[in-house]
Image (cartoon, rainbow, N blue to C red):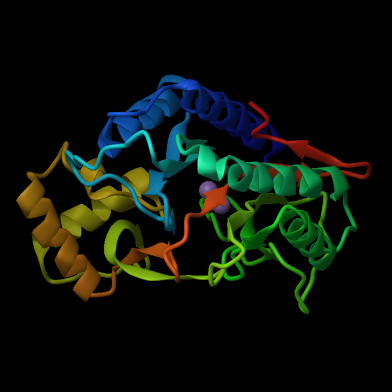
Length: 297
Ligand code: MN
Ligand code: MN
């Protein structure tokens, strides 16, 4: 585990998240948000660990801007902006909910409080199920519901979901947090009368390599090579291919790679009853007395 790189990536991601939080996004498009946050990450000397997610209202996660996406933030929207920086593949993953709808102020507060409660109880040896219970209780005590099928995760070099699940609810399976691992914790919260889980939506605009093999299409194999060289196994967006390929051609080649199962496409995740979802997220490394939050900002 390369602690220095986790810390560097975390400082950058945290700073960018705080800048994103302060800005007024009303009237701006999701493409502008992605461009802003992604260029701020690069400007500070990191790479993007994944396309910035700009998930509005009932979309919980995994929406990123299409090229020239005109989806615009209104003064009644709530938007989750989830961003990642990486240094040598060591990732900082963090998110903020920017909210323009007063009705949802306490929903956002519940996500923030749950994350805070988790950060203050974790140290090496703490059980993940106890953290899940703490997050769940914090959210329920404020009159809301955690999203049951979304959770945090362990991180590894060039791997966002490295195998362990940091739950947002009490769960039967559990592991002990270790000083030798980085994790992301990310409570997702919705209304008490929501279903409290997400389902896949129709839109898929985040992709990642899933296996590396030749496709018998030279141009598609060039795209595959480009993805590997620039993003490794980390997620990417169609937008990120447009320096090299024209949009229509990039889409066609990406479709070939998806059909050949070289690339997988992630569906957006939508709250099953259409209720608004808030999120907060930090990356951290446990120690004997607490945690180092790498994305403190
Ligand atoms: Mn995230
Ligand atoms: Mn995450």
